[in-house]
Image (cartoon, rainbow, N blue to C red; front, top):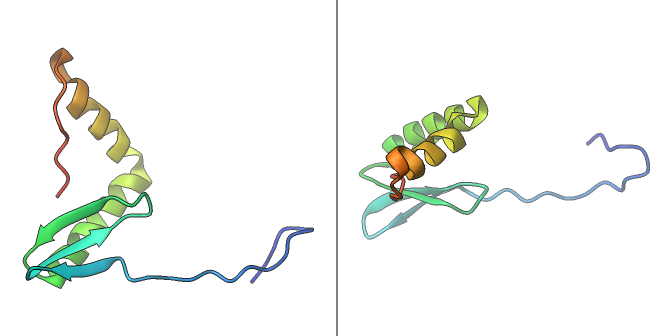
Length: 80
């Protein structure tokens, strides 16, 4: 692993983002947001890819803010 000058190498642990609960599939984001339920691991995987594309485009947070402030009303954004 390449480190910046003066930094010690670190060990990073990877955990599986997907888990199953009561027969439904979920994934967890880096921000510890649990997203789901989905009927299959494949569906959860597709939704994770969609989620990450929105995050990478900067759309996700903008959409979340828009959902909570639309027309001056506060509402819970829906994540699925």
